[in-house]
Length: 255
Image (cartoon, rainbow, N blue to C red; front, side):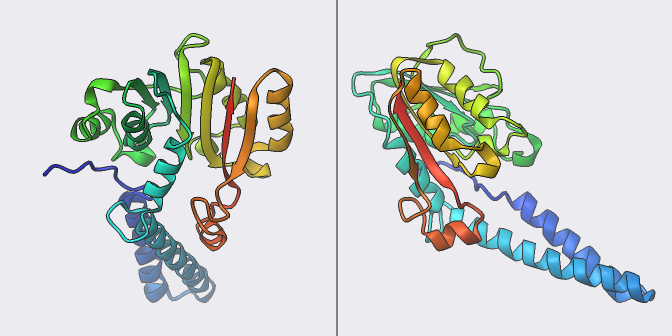
């Protein structure tokens, strides 16, 4: 029986990169005779060993095949906020391996889901073809499509979608104003459309998000909430702390 492959949010290539850097620094620590330089490489070796261990633990927690399966819990949790029983058009911004787009399509069997991503080099194992193959295996290939796209400037007219979703995308985009990225996403939402955007909404990443919630309400959005997910909803506070996910929340509402 075929099974979808949603990969892992902590790519093996990243783990191998840190492990390789650790090995190199360790070798240099052993062969270099100059005292101060040897100490520098020793410190670097210890730091890289810690980072490598952290990435391994992250990979284990996020794995769809492992015991914790945090990725699956988050994906299903975000998808549960979208209810288009009568059908409609849904957009997933930053679809990666297709997991969220597919989960939303499976929950909304009369809806059509479009996923966009830039599929950058840092996540080289994710691709359009992978999304399409996963959708086919999950039985929603005829109700999904996947395209190259840019979250900073969506290639869709205003009011194109009945719902928009996203998961852990925008904090990865270099920007001085991530609230503007959120507004660009909401631009393509129809009047009456719903949204569920999950990310690390810390002040460092987004600024004053409570102020942003009020701004949306002031311009006519309804039922806008920023719901924490780092307090047991998707992960425990301890998990959020050691995985650097503190501030995780889902922004929901209706246009």
